[in-house]
Image (cartoon, rainbow, N blue to C red; front, side):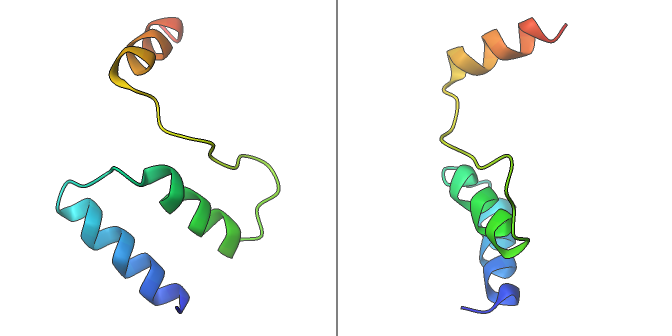
Length: 57
């Protein structure tokens, strides 16, 4: 799959409101850019996200 195909697939899924693979999407782009720091390891659930947001205020 070409980089263009990867971006198109991700953007089409996101345009449809599907963020269920956002960690995998992040890592696909991260790998294309030869990332070494910041690999995604999962997605926060609603409660985890709430706690995270509250900790940043």
